[in-house]
Amino acid sequence: MRRDHRSAILGVHWALILALVGLQVVVPPFHHTLLARIMVLAAYAIGYNLLLGYTGLMSLGHAMFFAAGMYGAGLPLFYLGVGAPQAFLLGIAASLLLSVVIGTLTLRTSGVSFLIVTMMFAQVFYLSTLYFNRITLGDQGFVLAGHLPPISLGALRVTLSDPVMRYNLALATFAVCLGISLWLVQSPIGRVLVAIRENEDRTQMLGYNTFAYKLLALTISAAIAGFSGSVYAVITSYVGASFAAILYSIYPLVWTLLGGSGTVLGPFVGTAVMTYTIETASRFTSSYLIVVGVILVALVMRFPAGIVGAFRRRWAPWLP
Amino acid sequence: MTALLETRALSKRFGGVEAVGSVDLRIERGEIRALIGPNGAGKTTLVSMICGRIAPTSGRILFKNREITRTKAYHRVAFGIVYTFQISSIFKHLTAFENVALAVQRRVGGLDRDVLAREVGEALAHTGLAGARDRPAGSLPHGHQKLLELSMAMALHPQLLVLDEPTQGLAREEIGAVSRLIQSVAGAATILLIEHNMQVVLDLSRRISVMDRGRIIAEGTPAEIEANREVQRVYLGP
Image (tube, rainbow over all chains, first blue to last red; front, side):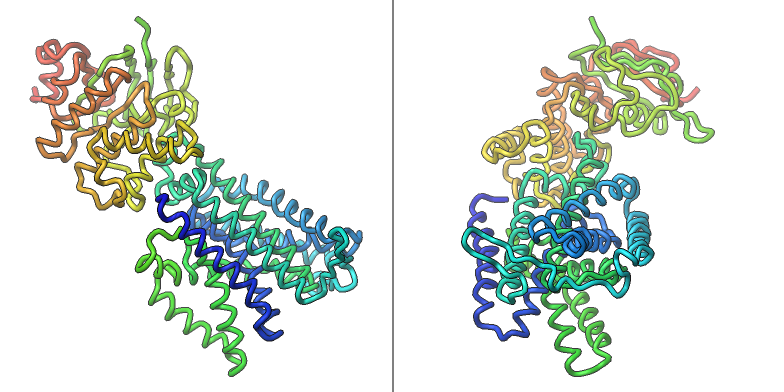
């Protein structure tokens, strides 16, 4: 990255975070809740994009990492009554651990095989959440309301059921993941990941252990997915098997492609546009998914590189 | 004199075809060794085994008297064995700077942006590509892509530099530039050069190995090679 663009890059990303800080005081309650959800799901997509957009690996099994974070945080909250900070750490640890095992097995493949194998593992994970329904309560899931003890920050007591707290928890999660993503893709590690995406054989012949780098990318991606999964459980107060289903593996793929794969801001833009499109369309018609489908197809045909990708090409080639 | 690289009875079979058969190659430290032979002789297969891109069927490879037959390709790069591809294999969508930066950061880490920028700048200047710094590598003319590939290889500070047809498809002036460039790294690195252009071979190399049908059929000085009956038969027909 050129030195002269570094302040512009930081400026753009800070501007988004500050805009989201400001938005919470002006938007009505409905959008308040929706935005909080968008920010957490965008964090999930950011993790997904590190793998797809920067490393060139298309997974169709990320729901297992999202759900591992959700259960990793939700089960201890529900059964053991741990505090929320510990729950988040447990959620991240669960998906991190899972991703090391899954990555070691699946990264022997690439391309379409990788897509299929990750999907198969995710299905195993999903079916397991149903099979062990005495613990997970399966499809029906469980509600965390009443299981979220307030967090004490010095003299301050924070109640997680408070909408303001939820919004800012979502915002903090998003900001942290955006920061990690922005730092990583501009770091020497990010440069190697892009090289793997472009030409893995050549990268190896430059002396890089590409398997190790891909595993690193997968674990970071999964840890972010797990983090957002655990936060999503807390802000919606709900944990259920549906989040482990294939739909939640497809969502981050669509959000990332729509917003612009291989751009730091793309996942947020894609998640926001898609969520608002569904929300708006469902208000007018019950067959809203047709409308969403048409809009998606039109957008992808008009901007094959995604919304932010197209913007970058035309106006801001320096955008990471 | 100790050999920098040695292969012992190195062989590679693809199904029923023996691409390389029992090759004993010995390269001394500091030499520029040319490897010539007709198309399909097994030259690229041989050097691919030396670099670790493909695994041999049997035989051994020693680098500085150390067994590296089963060593991964990326570890061999760390030992100092560097390969440049026959068909330019650069990162076409990345800038020339990023391409060379990948090689430089492999060696120096890359966390210090100033060191990285300086070293990349020097490497690009050395090959005359300073002006192409921020252009996507894929948009450069063919000759410049070859030079970029060489910049990347040299930025790794190789001990053994394996060049697979570095002048292929280049114009005459460009061939001269590549020759001079190879000459300039020869002091620091030992070079194994696959080359079809005999003028380049004779300009650079004091010792030539000739391959045919997977075997080394002759080895010696240019004069010895020229006088060799077997070589004449391979090149000119019986």
